[in-house]
Image (cartoon, rainbow, N blue to C red; front, side):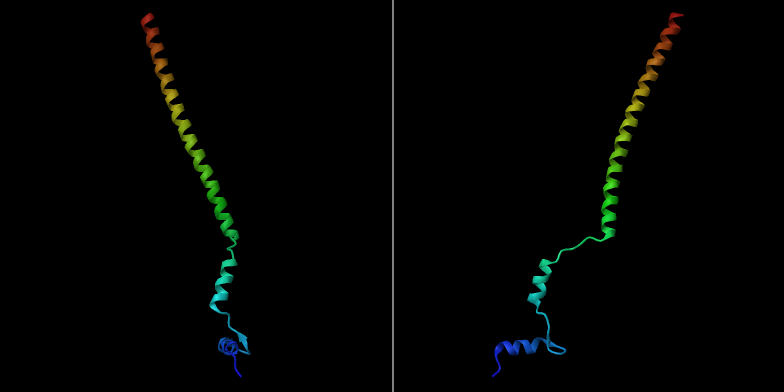
Amino acid sequence: MVTPKYIELWGRRINDNIPEPSQEDSQSTGKHLRVVPSELEFIRQDFERRNSELEKKIAQMEEEKMNLRLDMDVQKLETEKLRKGNNKAE
């Protein structure tokens, strides 16, 4: 007598009676797998982190440069005022 279980196994068999995995099995296996980043992915992440840090440093330096230019302009104006004051005094 042939049982329903036997019919199911017979229908799924491939070469030498090795059963073909069902879609249910592959889905459950897929849930347990996790993606392991490659070395290239680690390098990319490191590059992006360093790039972000450098962009922040560049922004800070540009702000400092602008402040220094403003300070320089103020010093020039003060120097000109002092020269004009000295010229009037003479």
